[in-house]
Image 1 (tube, rainbow, N blue to C red):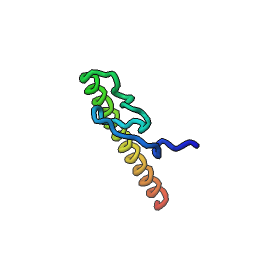
Image 2: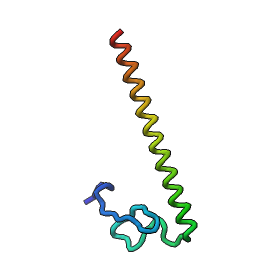
Image 3: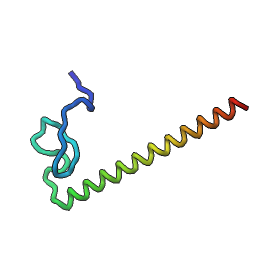
Image 4: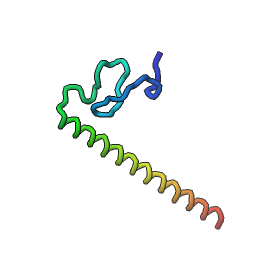
Length: 76
């Protein structure tokens, strides 16, 4: 049986704060990394998260502008 990714059991790593499989003994993201590398990893994921959030805002604005344009065309 295949379980969708969102329903799989995961736990949060105390070191890098990323999620990894509950079946793993240690975090698959930061295993074997130095503290400096862990800091860089956390910054990389924070930057990606911020970029994704900004992209989501952009799509929302575009959708609202399209809806506004459709409303103006249909009412005119």
